[in-house]
Image (cartoon, rainbow, N blue to C red; front, side, top):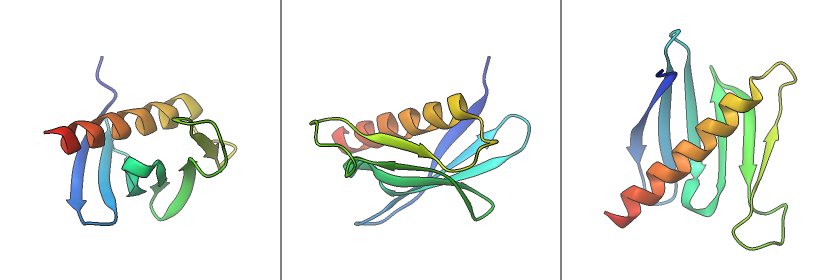
Length: 93
């Protein structure tokens, strides 16, 4: 069952931007240096989660800091993973 659609919003040399449209009509924005695992997920200008590799020293590891207590944690983790996979595929092809 489809829960959301993730689309690239615009692309620049330094930052990637994606729009996540949930089936119930909510839209999330994802922006930052996705290939470097340094980006944020926000809703209507409010930060929901921050993804960063800086917090960890283990290679190919990154953390997801959920900022809002009432946020849907599994959804935000899934969005982060989907955006990373899409960005990696775009870089390859």
